[in-house]
Image (cartoon, rainbow, N blue to C red; front, side, top):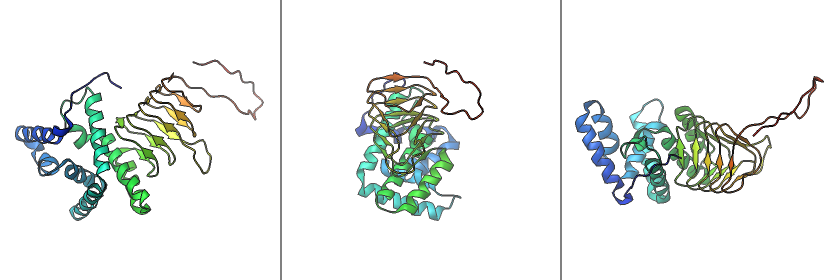
Length: 264
């Protein structure tokens, strides 16, 4: 994660977002309508997030369906305030850890990784309630819209930082704890086992670099770091850093010779 810290007052986060959006709406005529519709008309962070996600989930644009989704998402947020707490933690993680962000509303309004994560949270809630058609629809839209595929049954904590996010795949029985960083192209996948607990468990504070493939029901310990492009099929202890890839021939039907090379 980027060595960068910004002091954020959570109690003033929403008022700060609206103040910045209002200033930019006055300065940039081309953005005024968007900022007004998504942020300035909203009375709360939850209302703004429901509005933003509703527009992402409807295809093609249909205001009647957008309104229906806004109502449904808003009702979920009202009944499950922990989802908003998790979304705020995700946003704070973006703001505190990403030096490229210069204001407080950009991730909320524009970042596909943040949006995909909040779509997953909605899909997970529907999945837990047994409303699988709704969960599956949201997952499908998440893949189409953001290039992120998180199974609704997977368990993700809060304060997750999905930087760039495109190409992230998280399987059904995966678990990702709080304050984990996942870069683009990460797979938390299985090894071909047909059923049961078959996906990785990523403990709090772990860092998974871009393109890393973590396969099977293995644990990546708290604070561990997996380097970019690594293929991991064995557990990684807490606080450990692992790098590199390796492929080993299991059988060779051609009769050719194969010499295994060392790798680090």
